[in-house]
Image (cartoon, rainbow, N blue to C red):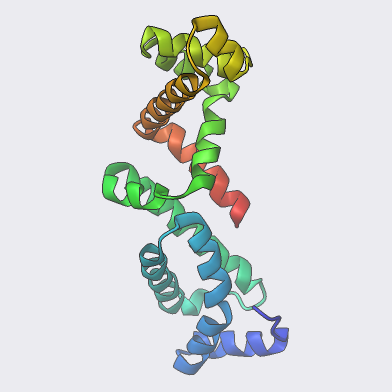
Length: 199
């Protein structure tokens, strides 16, 4: 969004407080692009973004009288957006379809989830999950991910190909991620950290 003169935005906010629909449209068009862009980066779903944008600006309209024109409206709007995203992810813990839509193709989210697996806070959970892996897969995972050995070193050690090592690792990571997804608090912590940094 191009910078808008502060006095113009303040005037529009004062008019918005009085229920001026034209002022509301001005605010909407001034902020829809930056808000929509940030939401799309997080949600990776245009459908979810459109629905959330409607909810965000509906909330702005409903609470227009309480807007403090002396404070940053941008910060106010981003705070509403951030809270709604967090609420959506909390709801997604219970509604699998929403979660699947959000994480589909969201490589950034997968990366952060994968990083979270190896954080010290998750050490006990990780150890329990590793113990549930098939014996061969567990050995390969420990050798590559925890001991830092190369695919070739592990392949030579167990008399298998590097592609077999990769296949075991992919399946192991998929299993660990799936277990994190059904550990709602662990997943929510990762997501909230990502959201806070994004906004």
